[in-house]
Length: 120
Image (cartoon, rainbow, N blue to C red; front, side, top):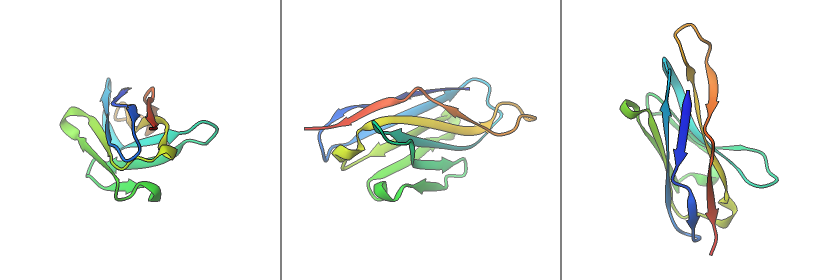
């Protein structure tokens, strides 16, 4: 399973960015896809996740500002980030929890990360 993330960049405080993550390779089933972020000197934290059925989960700090959605047919997930804050500068990683083959256990797969810098 390969995850390709894109969409990061430099944005001013209050600005918006949209991240995307496309999964490819051998995928039998997907449980959830999600976005995590890791700022310098901090632990990786969950930002948002979404199930195949469309149920979403958000970190309290991003509720009302970020929206996660996915296109199941394209195995692609998006994170629309609005009203960005400087403290949200971090590397954003996409995650997929699923099975490569029907007999495999569910596992976590990670993309390479995309840098988001919020600065004036």
